[in-house]
Image 1 (cartoon, rainbow, N blue to C red):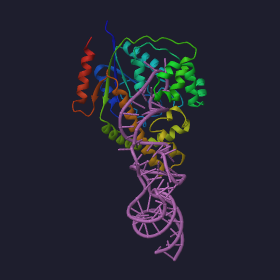
Image 2: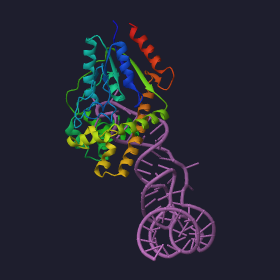
Image 3: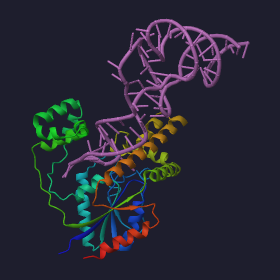
Length: 300
RNA sequence: CCAGCGGUAGCAAAGCGGUUAUGCGAUGGUCUGUAAAACCAUUUUAGGCAGGUUCAACUCCUGCCCGCUGGA
């Protein structure tokens, strides 16, 4: 029996994932599922570059208010549901987005333990110094702790989660996914990405990003998870004391953060050999993808 | 022209007569349920210019150049 097909389109910011996904959806009778940890939020439109393609359905966009938290676990659950219903409609699910971690949560095959987030636990441990967290790990989790690398050892967020997983409670096995994934990854040299980003920053300001932020601030606060987003968080000092200087430095910060973000994404995807890479600056770009997908799509 | 303050790594910004400021950025990474997050490593001795004092000067002294502020 052949597995059901799921197409994935990932890649760093500003590579035009959505517009490619829309094209492919039209061509192969598909519906999109966004794997984007920011476009999940209502009201973050200009800053996250949200598209509302006409004629193509896109799921998991605008499903949360900016003061709600979300996680890869929830993403996985929702996305798997969507994949199922799209298949039932005899259509092709197309996952599209730059949040590599969300995509991993779908693709990883090994059964995993499920341990729900416990907000009280996190808020308590967030108050403790990281040296204490390390000590706790050494006591309760010695072997795992000694195998951690520097980066993980010094990361309070990760240490807390690792302790949280150890808490008693129900832990469910998740079966492997019976899907035939084709994972495409759009990419480009960093220089090209950076100049695309710079252009986009300008046009987003013109589109009225500041007005959008103003509107969000009526109902939400800078500490809300949705506002801790590139293109928003950088403007907090500006809204605290508006002046040409604070505006300029906010925009400069935003640009820098956006560049760094693209780089992190590049690093993330680079390491995954199962992906099929497409360079968006190559002359064969859009047509080469379409024929590649067609081959996979028509195969049994 | 006079006076005051200042000139420190790509940028910002301290202390100090003799060991690494630091932050940001940049570069390379980490990642198994907060990921546009969080975290790690690297960024080979920088100190406006010319002298002087000293065993030793980014640090003290003199002159010059440049910037900011105030006064004529």
